[in-house]
Amino acid sequence: MSYLPLVETIITGLVDHPDSVEIREELDGHTRTFVVKVAAEDTGKVIGKSGRVVSAIRQVVSAVASKSREKAFIKIDTDD
Image (tube, rainbow, N blue to C red):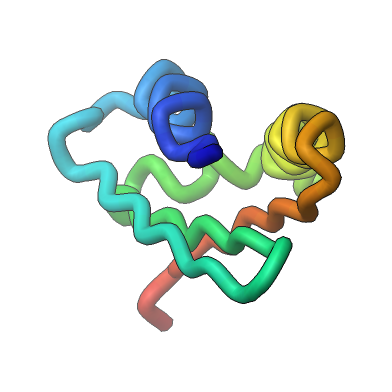
């Protein structure tokens, strides 16, 4: 089961430029990694103060994945 629509809905709801959101899903066994790329000015909104927003997103996606006995991770691509 893919959680891509869930991740996409959460991320696009947070940013000012939802058209520039790119999410890539990588599957490795029972582990899914979502690599999220947003506009430079939206990066702070997705990460949040002290990483609290991205931590909350990770918890939600991880909880949904655990129902299927999978692991899910979120990585923010910052293009530094």
